[in-house]
Image 1 (cartoon, rainbow, N blue to C red):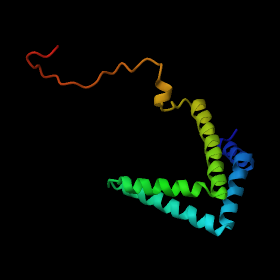
Image 2: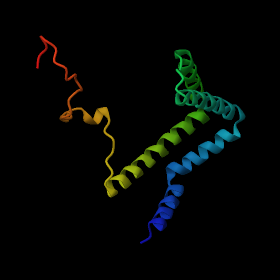
Image 3: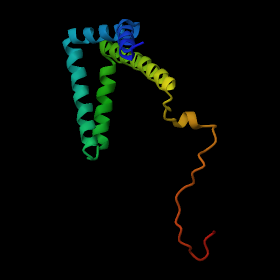
Image 4: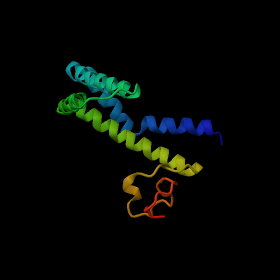
Length: 139
């Protein structure tokens, strides 16, 4: 059994799965519709600009975040873009499940989210505190 051969089989299965076919179709529909394509490109440029700014350590203003949020809200009213966003989400959910299965099979631990950690015992690591003794402080 070759790992690479199995990877090609997985890639072929993914390329033929309904989630990917829907994503591919939704992308083609948006590309055919000039207004939808331009709207989506504008939103992607704004998002990329903010990511670059964040990566450079620059502060992102509330106004910039609001502008991006309004743009995303506006494009979600376009049925072609909405279909694309839903298809992207469905495919990313599938890919997440695939990665989770692979991770479990080879023994990688998944990072725990806040929702998952609720109800579980807290970590035994205590908060950092000063080792200096101050008169009147509890020991």
